Each structure stands twice: as structure tokens, then as C-alpha cells.
Image (cartoon, rainbow, N blue to C red; front, side):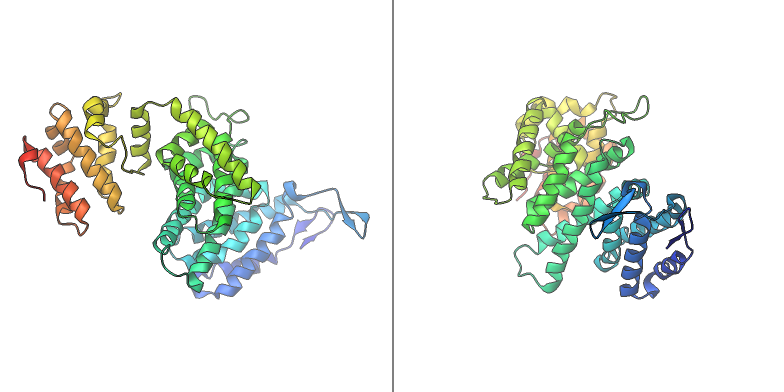
Length: 397
């Protein structure tokens, strides 16, 4: 596929790309095969994959020249196609791109292209939605489709894990992983549901790489926030990874890599947790969107910390996040948001007026008629606290 002294890529690759660009009208098997073939052809031209000589029958043979410059355009086109498949909500569509994506992940240059195309975000989203589907199936006998889904989760996790090896060398890739805590949340969910040991192993390794990454090589633009392992450890604490790590420590694993990763993460998480105040733990949890019942969602906590909801700029940003979480599809998250908003109203001076002004009442009211009984109860209590001064005398049963 590479000809001449310069090793220029021949134009036949365009035929493979045409197969991909047929979209839903094309044959799924043909698209999977064409994308994989194209990936294998193009990756060989990446400088990180080239060597001066190959060993054939025990003898060194000079490698044929391959021009990376001639492969850049088709590699960018293939990467764009892979990311477009990841944007789909259909597991079948995503599956088309997995073999090609896995093949391209072997090259540093391809990983950089994948990240610059927004691949980390969409890959994390797929893992998040896939993990939730597996969680729903956890207590149901696995069908052939279910088993395939586990394998797909493993392959997607493997690709995200591969991307973590670019963290130390690229500020932009660290920023992609840090955005909205999506990657950490997805990996934590996978460890929580533990669909298979192989998925847990790769997810743990990815989390360890995130927790230990540094900003020494590429600290980022002047004035940009520092993004390193400390940032990711904070996200992990917000996602309650410490609890899951503690559960894993009670299990008997034969894989030494899992045991080592669990021990390292346990030490790093506890060291970071000791340096954080209860308010910082709560703030990070709310910002991550992963609300879970605990000591930060109590009357005593809000008595002490209600004024902290003002924020450094007095914009009540954290309260706004809680109000947005009222619309969460996760019923537990919405219930906790109702509870916390109600407690803020109780213990912050003029909290009722502030909550009303920010639109809390309009979002809570419909939840009173929700099918989930717990969410109904918390929503009714929240509305009572917003509307009635002595809310505790209102019957909420």
C-alpha cells in the first residue's frame, strides 16, 4: 500500500473509506472489515510504529519506507468516522467501530487524533450508558446479547485505558479526561457493577493512571488550572470510589495486577481524603453529579455549612447545580437534590426567596406526582420547606 522510495500511500484506501461513508445504508460486516483494514494499513505509517529493521527468519531485513505525511489525511478521516459511531446511542452502531478503534490505539499519533476529535468524551459516555445497562441486567440471567455487551464494555474500557498513557505528555488530553468528571464516573460505575473480572482489571488500571498522572512535561497554557492526579483523585472521592475499593479489598483476586492497583488506589484516596474538609467532599460530590446518601446530606451538616452555599462570588453556583440535578433521570440523585435544597432553605437566611428565584419550586413540584415513593416524599418535603415556614407540621406521609 506504500510505494516508491518515499513510501507514499496509494489511493486505493479511498475505496475503503467509501464503504464507511455509506452509513446505515451500508453492510455492517463490510463496514467493520473496511474500517479495520484501513486502520491496520494506516497505523503502520505512524512514526511510533516504525523501526529501522524487521526480523525475518532470524535475519534483520530493512523495513520498507512508509510516508506518515501521506497517511495523515486518511487517518484523520478514519478517526472522524470512529468518533461519529461513538456518538450513536445504538450498541450495534458502536460495535462497528470497535475493531478499528482498538487497532488505531496502538499508535501515539492516532491516540492524539482521537483525543482532539472529542473521542475521550464520547468513549466515556458509551461506557457510562453501557455500564448502567449492565447494572440493570445484574440480577437477570445473561443472554447471548448480554454476554456480547460485556465484551463490548471490555473493549471500550481497554481503549479508554490505552488513552490514559497519553496523560503525562498532553495537557489537552488530561483536560478531556477531567471534563465534567465523566471518565472517572464511568470507570467507577464499571467497578461498582463488576460485570467481569477482566473489565474490573482494565478499569482499575485506567483509574490508577489517572490518579498518578503528572503535569511536569506539559503543564498547559499560562494561567490554565493545574490538572494532574490530584484533580482525578478528588473526582474519585466524589464518585464514592473509596467505598468500592474497600469492597474490592475484601475479595480474593488471583490477578496480582488487580491486587496491586487496589492497594495503590486505596492509599492515594485515603491520603487525599484526609486533606479535604467535609465541605470540600460535599462540593466535589455535587459538582460531579454523583449524589449518594451519606453524612454530607444531613440536618447537622447543613446547620454548619448552609452559608457556604453562597460560593466565593456570592452566585450560589452549587445551589444552581443542585436545582439542575432535580431533572436527573437517576431517582436517587433527584431525591437527594430535593433533600439538600430543602435543608438549605431551612438554614440559610432568606433561603426560601433565593430557592424560588432560582427556579427550584417549578422543578420540584412535578416530582410530587412521581412514581417513585421516596422521590415523592422528598419532593413534598422540599416544597413544604420552600412554601411553609413551619414545614415540619405538614403531613408528608
